[in-house]
Image 1 (tube, rainbow, N blue to C red):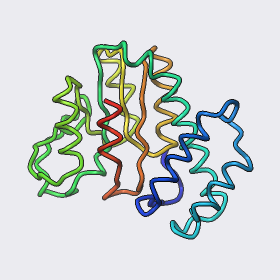
Image 2 (spheres, rainbow, N blue to C red):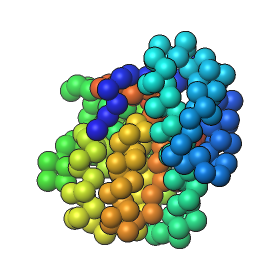
Image 3 (cartoon, rainbow, N blue to C red):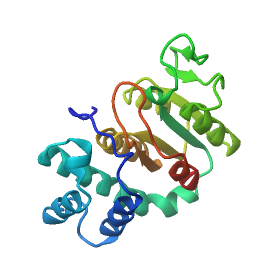
Length: 204
């Protein structure tokens, strides 16, 4: 289930994410950040820049730290996997109408990138995954993941989504015994969502 609020972290300095990674590596911060989450939000003016109120900003920071911690704990196991899937959000496509040449397969269900726009985030991410041997799925929603995992036998998966959906997806992967890595969105919404291709490349 996506957040009940919209956010855009693309204007937040990169030092915020470095600090976030540092906090995530400290012990016993996985579930209870408390004052540390508040300090991060205040230090980087998260509420001022994004327009989020304090509870939403803290929720976002806590979820992002959870994602970082989970990635670190699963990384070694993930690197040993061979059959892997890459799950991308369809809302990161450049076009959300007939200009997008992606085809939809309702049986899986997923979009198949048509590679029609060189500056499309999903096109670039799909190409990156395909070149590295991943099966790439461009999903209309996170509820599609259990259907795909039931149909195909993967050992590992990389998912791109908002923090809440990533944590839900992680639960699905755990139940299936898969090792996962997660890439959080830096801008959410129903269209024009954004994530870091550089982060994806490092993760793949």
